[in-house]
View (cartoon, rainbow, N blue to C red):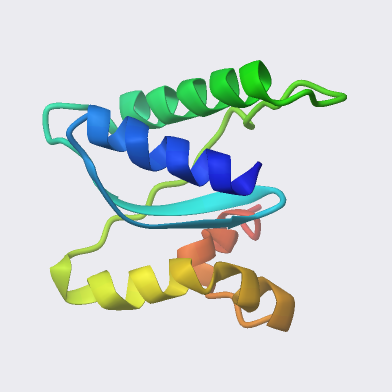
Length: 115
């Protein structure tokens, strides 16, 4: 399912005139380093990605439960200067989670620590 989802993310982003630089994930979330078409709101982009992937996964795979995304999402912005670091982190996301070397800023964990 993972390969299908990542391919769908890339294709839908391309359809939306946006560029995916890196995509990776673990069982409960994915990260996408992307340049979103400036004429589109971030929430619209995320909604389109979630809608396309869940529709296609449920249409093509015979799962015991329907595939759905959580309602919320996190967004972090970064510039060209940080592109290599962010893409490297996304590409190594599984390893970071397995080895406990996640980056709180890139994982957006700091929101969970808020009162």
